[in-house]
Length: 207
Image 1 (cartoon, rainbow, N blue to C red):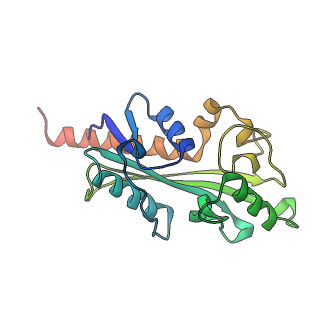
Image 2 (cartoon, rainbow, N blue to C red; image 1 turned 90 degrees about the horizontal axis):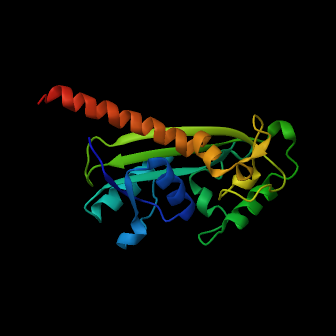
């Protein structure tokens, strides 16, 4: 399966910048440039929501579509904010208000119980009803701090601490983050799957 142009099924400027850098030289068109409206994320898992968004973007364009659904999973909060990460503090929540809600809920939780992970599910569809979408997932483990640190990144990056780096995601440069992030891991897996699929199709249809 050869894809030269992709619609990115997200409104998040942070995700658009990260995915565009990771996917180069594939041309990436944010769905907002095509006036594609947002779709309700009615799934109960990251994978379900990623598929919903990818099919929606493809349906409103003439291109293949890539979507990711990602979020922060905190064990001590029963998996929250999970699929509601972007709107944890309400439908009009900002990164700051979402972080504040997490920090408030984490008050009183000791350092040994602050484990968390970022999770990303990606879906690539060639057309809206693609019966064989390519799916991939990535995970990055860390610890929730009791206060933000760093100015880089977006979302919950300033409170997500990486013990192996002794930094939060917001203290890492974009190049370093793009090597280890949950989104980078998912995309690497997705691209490997795409290459395997293309190879299999070539073997079935030799020219």
